Image (cartoon, rainbow, N blue to C red; front, side):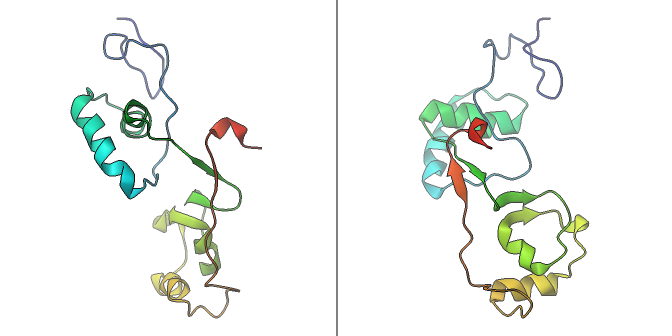
Amino acid sequence: MLYLSEGQHKITLNAWPWTSYPNYITGPVYLMHGSTVLPLLAAIQTTPMIPFEDVYLTGICPEKVGIKTLFSSGPTSMLALGSLYSECDTGNYLAWNDWMSSLPYTKIDDFYRGSSESCVNVTASVKFFFRSNYSTFP
């Protein structure tokens, strides 16, 4: 059998006859705007499934229906890869692994209710710095 690539996203050329995948988001967290749901559903219903959900859901299907992918850079990120040491850090992320954090849920709940006394400006907006191409990261 001939394969497109080795490693995690190895697939036969029979299943995927092109030389590369479209840009896609890898990882456990991605955010999609509500306006993408119906076009994405239409693409999913008419596109043969491949075994890699990140490539399929954030690359192949969005490209098919013209959904533009944006990547966040800067101090705010989608996923905290390390441990959160302060509830003030939670405002910089959309998700984190709770098994890696030593913070009790009550502290995080206080932060989102605006009643955390140790954080400065808890009502400030979370800002993402979106770019259309992940290769433009510094």
